[in-house]
Length: 412
Image 1: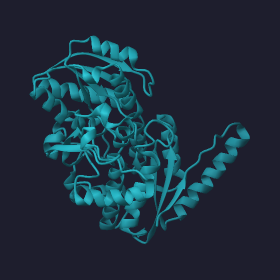
Image 2: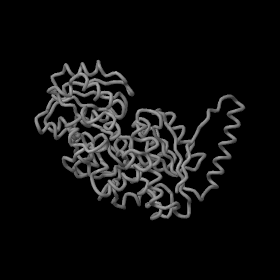
Image 3: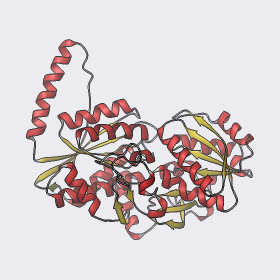
Image 4: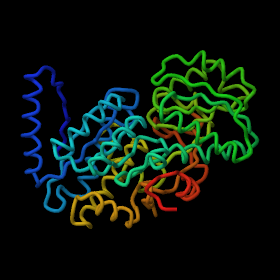
């Protein structure tokens, strides 16, 4: 079983402490270089904020499952997992990851929920030539204008999450949209990608309002949305922002009105907390659901035994991405980033998470997505029986075409 440690960092203030920290860092760096018999995986995630339930410690458990399945070693190296809380702050995340790589010998960084955080971590891993396996962060810019030759965005992105949902709603006549958007990188990207899908399908965006990240009170924003003539109120947010917005929309009577609430990004644990009476009938798109196939159910049972909850798509993506990475390390015979990335790109992804998945040159792992509907309470058999599959969206239709993202590493 992989060893898991929580990374801790301490500030270095004052000349004496700075000198001591510098000496300690030099010693640690030497030790990390000498410790060649360990492959370290760093899980950078939200352990204490609004994404902690759907990511957090569950993502660490997901990494442990991957290592247990692969085996405790690769290339003669013992596999070790360390983890840290980025507190949803890009500067904290960057500092942690840079320290991991420079002084702790971390070979690969995984998860990275929160797009602003992921963009910051991606810059560090690109600079340090280390691989970053992105699962929780969704901005499509991570494989677009901000792409990296050493990153893979595994689970979903804002383009795929919004594309099928927007097209389906516009096709059934709900053509006018109003966006309620989280005011940070993820929300902006989700709104942008959904708006493009709406307009491409023949719909129109009548307005938008942006709310602060981790916002408890949506009353003023919902009143603005309610006053719009738009048929669809699209929630371009996630985590507790999504849950609070949906709950308060229900209290305002919006979910029982002639307006449709479009959930552009959904986390299983948020829905379980909200209850189906609040969200029933709404359409959304996701990359993974625990009860879809025998393989997803078998994985979910193992995860549930550890966490007493079913896995979210982000947590399942961590297991899948790390498993694929370790297989690529073994096949490449090295942990060197370019060689491992080449093996990851040339090897199809066939596991409980995806069948026929492929890692593209821009770092996008392309796989099927699933248009889902929240069940009615009368259809559910238990706490986690929440979704029903409407249709499968093939990966090449779900994700943005390779040549349209603006990734500077892709030759058109």
